[in-house]
Length: 345
Ligand SMILES: Cc1ncc(COP(=O)(O)O)c(C=O)c1O
Image (tube, rainbow, N blue to C red; front, top):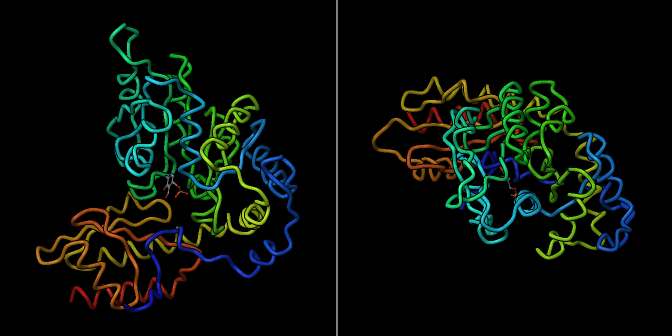
């Protein structure tokens, strides 16, 4: 099979840069399960401060971070309100049922964004027959909707409803960095509306491994115990944390380049007969390409692209996803548009 030269399958495919690798080599380390890895402690303090929260916990993945949050906020039998296309409902292997014994209450969104009235309607009236509504999860940016950004006003409305009903609020902010650079709204302001926030370093920021959960001290103490029983306690994890510190220091503002590349790709694709992109959904680094030709489906298109050295992922029968990232240049975008033109001509 031909080597992928332009890898748009995900922003998780990035390789650590030389500077990041140097930082990893030089990292001071200790046993983090015993709490004495100075680099992990530094990362946790740095992100807690950035998010305006009391504490933070470094974890191996975004999935673990979300699942720990669900576990610490709920009791078995509780219900978690989330958007229908969100990551925790679609891509975390049913873990809320496995780890926390909770059930999910999915709400339809528009481009992944839940309307506050829908959220309000999903909250259970106390009744002996009902599960107890306990937690609302918001995903910003929204992966499956194509990297869409939650309007801050909608977040504030959901926050008010959560307060009114005494519900906890968790933010799956795997790509909150992308929302932050695009809107100029700080990580601290976004985080102020949530009890816990999960952020990933291994997506657009380009670190090889790592996510973090922030919240108040009591919640993060509980989270640490959950991380341990899930097998996520890591020892000399400073090697990984140093890559995350480097990523935060060097790779946040450059996400704008990924966003510009995504827009360029979307515009180029929209000019090709047989392909269509919902331009209003292209707000950050993800482009969802819909195929409008009978004879090609998403799997066939991805195979044809692969034969030409371009990687994209099928997400539905007639939809392909392209995610711009640290390892994709503007010239790579030009080449991708040329290849798509060739395939569809
Ligand atoms: C929105 C969102 N949340 C969580 C995750 C899970 O992250 P991980 O792959 O590190 O478990 C992803 C992964 O792509 C994601 O897109």
